[in-house]
Length: 188
Ligand SMILES: *[C@@H]1O[C@H](CO)[C@@H](O)[C@H](O)[C@H]1NC(C)=O
Image (cartoon, rainbow, N blue to C red):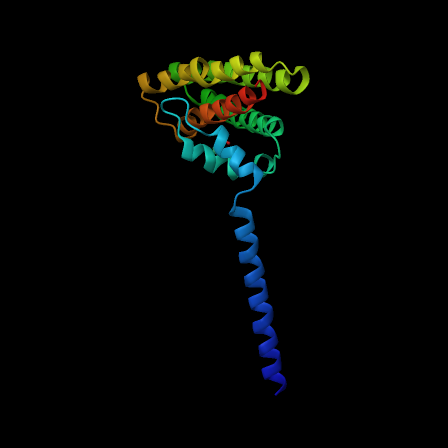
């Protein structure tokens, strides 16, 4: 008798945990203000822009998915983009110290990431501190095109097959152009 009460209780506890966790999942994945904003800023305005990957990356980052307006969303994306590009550059720096011969392409990437990070940092302070949205969109566009293409082209011609650099090159325009979309909306 006692043991069957215990097992009924355990089943009850088990199911309530299970049900509350699945309710939690449903709440987390249904449309929130930020998920519709994320779809908006990840909408495809450029060729080669991977909207699905953009939505996937931005939704997976708490500091971005918790934004409740486009201003905060743009700040979150730029901060994350800066930290991601900085990590990639740190990796490139270490790689450069190890390599002895074929440094050309990797050195190009170092310069490429220097300017990507510089432009993203300018854009962040233009939006956050100066409310200079138009100038910021220009910097975001440059980071996502000319600046990162310098490394993208170098890895193709140097036949560099480095996963970290290739992913870095792919995500810089995702952060840059989604931030561009967010900041651009602030100007209207
Ligand atoms: C940059 O972000 C992407 C997407 O979240 C991730 O896969 C990658 O590992 C990050 N790169 C670094 C160097 O942290």
